[in-house]
Structures are given as structure tokens and as C-alpha cells.
Image 1 (tube, rainbow, N blue to C red):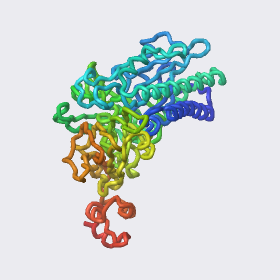
Image 2 (cartoon, helix red, strand yellow; image 1 turned 135 degrees about the horizontal axis):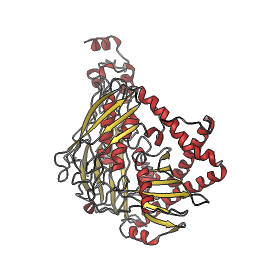
Image 3 (cartoon, rainbow, N blue to C red; image 1 turned 90 degrees about the vertical axis):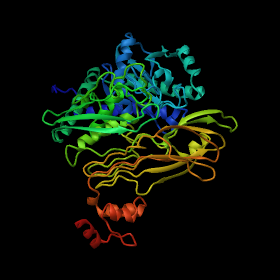
Length: 589
């Protein structure tokens, strides 16, 4: 890192950082308040960010890591490559998985911020996961699609949708005839446009307000500061190399034997550099699980930033200290057209990120983290059907009901609402009341499943069991519930999390045989989908857990007294108090 004379002092740097983050939050608030579909205005499955004119990540605020750590930089490069003359008033629609985007369901609007002299100064980006993207079946996760043609999604490789602030109606008509609920899609599309135009307006105001030299100096100085923090964080890690792997569940007809992926991690604490090599993995597969270039790189980055044990800003400066090796035509690398990447933001990306964070744990006790619960249980299914209530009609929406997944770390239990490393806690669970008002669904129950946590010195979060069904119509649910066959893996002596399970409960109360990882199920009125998510894994031996924590878990109903005694070696009296003598005896053997 080259140290240069600073133009900005620490106060100015902090103020500008907050100003840029504030602009991203204004974009975020616009999208949250104006989007039509529940996946956006309730679950918040979207992200906003600001890039420099050189396509470097400058500010992402509370965006989802899987959306923005890598990808916006690639998409901005394609924007310039496809449209070398950028003008104020331009807006570009981009969802191509072969040109830097995450997957086809994540529709992205890019707007170049052009100053009064015609110079491109920043790029603002808003990305949203749409409830429907034109896929052949009513889901945005087509795991069994053999290629992008069978997937069926509309693909827009950085297509201009506004010029001089006016819509390109021909592009919009293409979408309207392929989307199942076009009025819902159009409302979400307008929300995306509103978000980027708010960001553009506020950046143009900033350009008018600030001294040109100081504002021009900010990105480089902010990046240098962030890089210094990253250097300090890496130097607190021990040097070492390790390889970890994980298995994805089989998918009949698409991935019959499952799939193993590997990550090789190298930490050089003296040089303050981390490398993740993903090249020793299978070629692209004839299914929708292939990662995109952005999600493969982001998965590795998520694992590193999660396992660092230090808070470091996520931007182009801190990214300088991390190198991710990818290869073309690799299932966790750079995909070749026409392989499908329909599920690139969840299953393999989560599995890969967990390989990296477990590799950091392998460097020694006190580092890294256990694996989070696997993505994505039936409680996050894409639902569709026809709403029979007056004034309603066809509907499509992704659920975000009960799902925990938190992994244990070296100093804390798993986070109950993290919803995976790619979400990092920024996704919000559905409001049951609002969901039932918007869609003809009934949420019958949500509760923590006792004795489902990954036991350890620190515990992974327990699983949630959810039951939902339809109000008065047939309801189709499509899910890809990873973790049905392979558990989340514990580290440093911690135990694995519980497996995911899913069933249909019929109107008479009988339960179906266990259903598979990838299913499309239609339930009738009176029937329910039963979803049990994968639990997070534990960190450290369970027999070393603080007895007070064990007693608290029993009091909450998360752990049974029998499991407290057998797994954690903690004896409790009938009133739930710790039997100190018995506990000491149990732990002495």
C-alpha cells in the first residue's frame, strides 16, 4: 500500500463516509417504501450501492453481501463496454449472469452520475430479487434447469431502459408479456428506478456543495484507510494453509449424486494477504446450481469477512488484500453460456462461504466460525396460484418465514435471524399479518424445535418449524431445501446442526413421507406445508459450555434436561437450577 499525503483529516473522512452511506440509505428507503411485492417491501431482498467512475465499490451501507461484495464492479465495467458514451438521464437494466450479475432474478438498474461538464463521476446501483423473472416454472430458483433456455428467464445484458430520463417502452413491453403478474413487476421496476434516481440526485447535490479537490480525494483516502484496517485484521490471524470441502444434497434428475465443493485458503499474516483458490472444483453442471463469477468471488469474500473476527469496511480498499482464484467453466467459478445459474445466490454460494469460514477456524481455536444452517428451507418457498378474493387474481411471491441458520463463533452463539452469510441478518422475516393480508396464505405455526441446535462451547442456532397453507385456493410451493441430506458442520469439537426436513400435513392430520430437497408441491385448502430448517453448527466441545448458558437454554425450552446432561454434562435440579456437584462429577470423567 502506497502512503500518500492526505488532503482530508479524520473528521472529514468520517463525515464523508457517513454522507455516502446516507445516500445509499436514502436509496434503500425509497425502494423499501415504494416496492409492490412483499419480497421487497417486507422481506427487504434488495441492495443499493455507490461505485466510483473507475467501478470500485465505495459505499454499500446495509446491503446484502451476496448482492454487492463482487458484481457491481463487473456490471459497471460492462455498462461502459456496451455503452462507451454515458449521458445524464441514462439508466441501464442488467440481470445477465454471464456479465457480472448474481442471477437472473436479481434485476439491477445502473445509473451513471454525470456532472454538469459531462464527466462520469459515480455509478449508482439498485438490485432487487423479483418474485417472478419469467422462468418456465413459477420460481426464481430453477434447480433442475439443464441450461438457461430451459430456465426460461428474461435476460437483459445491460440494456438501456431510460434515455434523457424517459423510458424505453419497447424494453418494458418485452417484460410485461413474460412476467406472470405484470402490474406487480412494473411497480417493483418503478421502485428500482426511483431508488437510483434518488441516489443520482443526492450525489449531484454533493458535487455542487463540496470543494472539488476534497471530494475527488475521498475515495482513494477512504480506500487506503480501509486497507489499513484490513491489514491489521489479517495480521491478528495465524499464517497457514488449509483446504475444506462440503457437500450439496442430491437433486433427482439434475444432480443425482450430490456435489462436493472445495476451498483452499492461504493466510500470510506477515504480508497481510489472504488467498482463496476455488479452481479445484468440478466443471459447470447441467442444472441451475452453477455460480456466477460475482457470486463465486463473493462467496469466498463473505467467508473471509465473516471469519476475520474484526469489523472492517467492505469496499475496494479492504478488497485489495484478498485474492480469489476462479477458473472458467467451473461450477463455482466463471460460467459458460448457456449453463444455468438460476440458484447462484443461495445454495452453493452459502456452502462455499461456509467452507472458507470453517477453513479460518481450522487455523486454530479462537478463529473463524462453524457452518451456518443450509439454504433454503420450505419456509422460503416461492408460492403461486390464483387468489379467489374479490379484486385479486394471479399471485407469485417468495416467502421469508421462520428460518434461523446462525452458526456459532469463538465468542458467541449463533445469530437467530442471520438467514445465512449472504443475507448477514439484513433480510427481514415476513410479517405474518401483512403476508396473510396480501396473499391467500395462512401461517399456522412458527416455533423453535427443541434439541435442534449444533451443540458446542458456543451453540449454533436451533431450527425453526413452520407450517403454512392456503386460505381457500390451491397453492403451489417450490423450494430448494439444502441440508436435507448433509448437515451444517461444526468446528473445533463443536457438533453439526440438525438436518432440514419438509412434509405435507393433510387435512385429516396425517403427514406425508419426507419430501426431497427440490420439490414443487401443490396443497389444497386445509393442507399444510411443514418446514423444518437446518440448524446452525457448534463451536468448541459441548462439555465446555458455560453451565449457566445451558441452564438458560433449558429454561427457554430450546434444550431438554436430558440433552443438557448427556451432551453438555450439566445436571439440573427439578426447579432448573444447576446441580453443581453433579455437574462437576459429569465433567470430571
